[in-house]
Length: 402
Image (tube, rainbow, N blue to C red; front, side):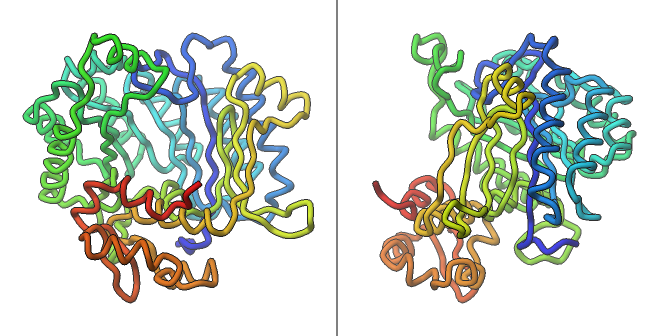
């Protein structure tokens, strides 16, 4: 297997859905079928522009997300995957994930994805309760989700993730538990569970602001989170990241073998390239002064402008920043502490920054350790169970104040 600490990820954003969910604030659009082909043209063009700059850089994981990649027809999906293989040097064990909506896939499409090298499917199930699916605006029902998993298995996929949302307004614990039990009958290799967030400029935000629906209850969400932790542990899943659980057949003491390798790139604050409208990138590149600096940037979001700029050979960068070492250290802590068992490795921090973690963050640790939020040993710093429940407050302490 590729060295996980030499990882480099590729993200490809498909900004289309059959229907946009009322809680979603991702850069996605419904009803733009006439733009599918031109957008895939632009995605492929952006890849070819990046290919020379990344020559010799092995890509250890690919994530095709959105939106809903599987709204694209088979010809467009094939073109996209073939361009990925043509433009980039994928490692022999490269993990290639495609997201999918249970309402927009069939057996032929799954077989195509598998034949084109996709190794992992991530299905946005969100719930098995009919009333919750209606509230979330999903286009599928529970039977569709089960059929999608069966179709993916029949196509040859041995690595399937299922996404779910908890903490819905008035969600009953027995309904949440029923969803978990139904999910477990499908024996997924990976589960992602996210607490519902009311994002500004979404229909859900308007509903809450106008009193149409109550705001999600944080205590209720915390109870559901603890219920999930207990049930999934009993079912043999390892809780390796704040919102993620995976099956394990390996012998790694801190990371299950079915952990999402692409998302580990993000949580370990490693390098990745984002392709597509609104996609973000993070890597170390040459700067105008002739040195090397850690940088991040994001592409323009609107699809028409993105397509026009790429095809005209213009920049698609909407924002760009150089990340100074202090911010990078804070972000490494914020992201790494999300890894429940691995945490932030002291030796890796020292190697990356040339400074001991415990020296750099001595005041923060002097507060958080006695407070019972983190534990420190000779190898790593990790959240405690208490810290896990107030993670955002812990993470904020490591970021530089303005």
